[in-house]
Length: 418
Image (cartoon, rainbow, N blue to C red; front, side):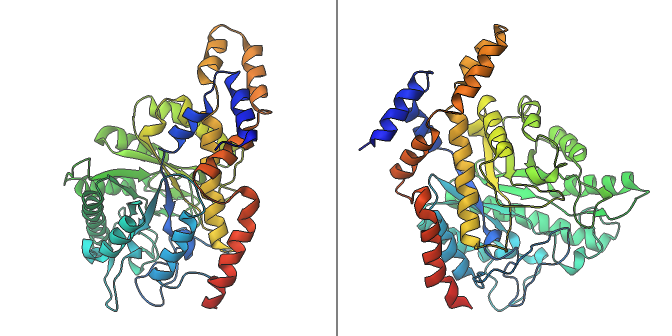
């Protein structure tokens, strides 16, 4: 039964033409892809002593309780899924396969190494997405993979990319939902580079070879992730925004925008209407950058809200694929996951509760004051009561219960791993 506070909020929103019940039903159809790598600091399970190294990726902190095995990582993900509302997917990196005691190099991975993940996902009513792992490997030590001028290195990573596409298509067929395969490479240089054209020509050639094989869209979708700079590639990134935007547009590949891959003063939401005017699909990696390409836990802040608003206003929210991408080992990893996932869901709700048609009507009538006043009106409406009702309907902890819930899991489960 609806709470009194929600009934009051529903009436308040009704005065500006918003049906909160319809909004909550729509929100409950928007999946968010939760990234597996927050749980173990992007380590993966290729070898017992696997550690993150190189490739412009750095995780800070050593908070107790890090997942040491796939079983522990899945248990942590199950706890997260029990706390965050709404439908979800799980995004895997290729380095998270079940390889057992044998060493399986990146250019040798097969679908069988991910059968356990498919079975687990089906048992937990989630779908899987996938990512190639082009970092933390001897073949990436010089900073180049698909754009490498060393033909042996380049062919190694081309084969890895081909196998990730095959695995993603296999996953999508198994689960009956397209597996979104994201490709991000760390290729670039720390200092000024003379032959930028040469490296980008090699990357284009590699991608052309990788995408030669076509897979059914109902099984998998390809996405290419752009980047402005990274640790160790401050001066030159081969797969820049301009490169991938052109390649994606000319080759029918989806673009992936990571909020942490732009200058921190840029408004990523302003880019969405330009992209979605020409494309019906987009992969968003929602992160929270602070200063230097840092992937902080997503919060319900202005930048996250603006991205959510633009996705809703574009009319293409359902065609966009939303994923999280952050890693913070300085705090409880479960809490980081939960906060990030719930914050993005909260931002989507905030955006869906906006009377977009009325705002546009005011704009077209030249009534700038009315548009401004309506926006200000939204800031004092009882949004929190609608969010609380959504949590109640999904049978997950309220905001006030989160700290104790995460603490209880830490005391019972995470401390045993020390």
